[in-house]
Length: 251
Image 1 (spheres, rainbow, N blue to C red):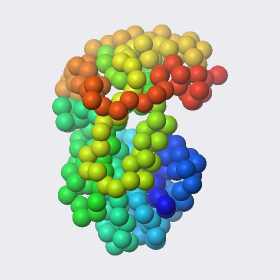
Image 2: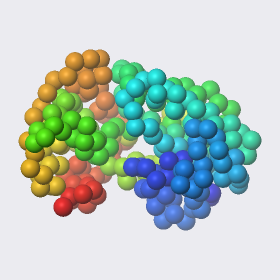
Image 3: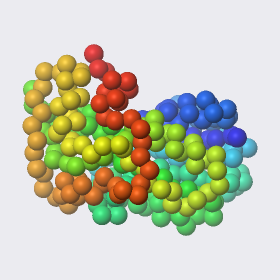
């Protein structure tokens, strides 16, 4: 099959590319580096010629609800419009577990994306996954002040990006299912524990301290609602296994 991967160079995207190629599929990489801008639609129609499915794993670096909605709405509409013109039979979107209960910030954009995908004429599948193992490092990058890392309190069940990628390719190989079974990681974790273990793995001389932040988003994160439920599918790679195998910049 011929799969187009939107966001092919991102955290999940390069794993999706690898998984699809390993399974014998032809891959079209959509990114600004290859001449496509999914937000504006530039270059998208030409890239989708002959595609059987589009796997959308695009993301935007923002905590602003307005910017997140703007990006995901524009990207989804440009992809789906091009898919309809090119006769693509299956659109697969990656979303996030539990965001109905925490419809704020970045998650507001993902909810807007889901609504657009669901209402489109192109048959679709939506996979919701929990936070990636990389989430701890992303928080550390944002909350480190000198020798201290102020880590927000949070209950999560992180999943490996490579496990998410395998699930997305499996969905793309089949018929559209609408909302697929959620995917979560194999173990519950706290953000503080993940941050401390990541710092140890990187031999970073920083002290991670847990903090309780105000606001609806952070209350939602502390509640554990983003961990998924027992009827979810589960990835295989634990956070500690990811630290040993995939964590970037461990030296």
